[in-house]
Amino acid sequence: MLDRYNRNIHYLRISVTDRCNLRCTYCMPGEGITLIDKKDILTLEEIVDVVTTGASKFGIRKIRFTGGEPLVRKGIVELVEKVSSIDGIEETSMTTNGILLTEYAAALKKAGLKRVNISLDTLSPVKFSTITRGGDVEKVKDGIIAAREAGLTPVKINVVKTEVLDQEELEALKSYCEHNKLEIRYINQMDLKTGTFSKVEGGSSGHCASCNRLRLMSNGNIKPCLFGNHGFNIREFGIEEAFKLALDHKPLKGKINDNHQFYNIGG
Image: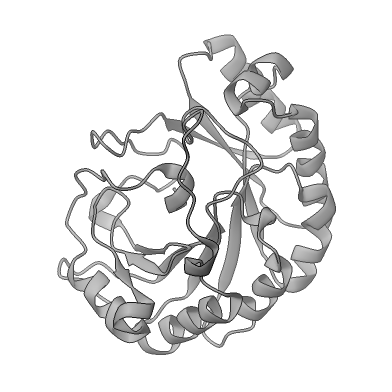
C-alpha cells in the first residue's frame, strides 16, 4: 500500500508485550514504570487477525516481533507459527535481548521465524550489567550461539552507542561479530520526547524518505511513526479502519513522541 508520499508500506512491527526481563538504561526508567493493563493487551488471536487483514487487504509482507522483550510473551512460538503461515507474509523476524534464546531458538525456527536481531551493547560483564541493570552478558552470547545453530540467520547485532562505551569496546564488539559471522549495526542513542533520532549504521532504519513500516503496539494501537503521537486502536476503530487511519496520518518525517517510551513501543 502507498502512503501520501508514495512510499510502499509493507512492513509491520508488532510489539507483543511491554514487559521485559532487563531494564536497559536507554529504554526503561529505573522505577515508576506504568505497564499496560493485561486486559488491554491484544490476545494472540487479535494479533493474527491484524496480520491477516494487513496481508490480504493492505499489502503487508514483512513482520518483526518486538517488545518489551518478545520472548517473555506467553505463547510467542505459537504466535510466530500462526503469523508465518498467513498467506502473503514473506518474512518474519524478531528483535530480542537474547537472554531466552537458548530455550526458544530451535522452536522459533521450526515455527517459521527467519532471523533475529539481538541487542548487545558491550562484551564487558560489568558494563553490560550496568547498562541492563543486572543482565548477564554470557546468557546473551549463549543465545547468539543458539540462534546460529538453529539457523536464524543472518544474526544481526544491535549496538546502542551510549556514553559508557569507548572506542576500544566498540572495536571489540566489531571483532567479536566478524569472528562469529554476525552482522553488526550501530544505533546512536535516541530520545522520543526531543525528537532526537539517527540513521542506523549498517541498516536502513532512520531514512524517513524511504520508511516502509507501521507499528502495532501491544495495546492494539497502530502507529504511523515511531516519532509521533498518533495511534489508532483496532478495538475502537476496527482493524481495517485503524490501518487506513494510520496510513493517512503517516508523516513525511517524524518529530516527537511524548506519550510513549521505547520499552512500550517496540523501537
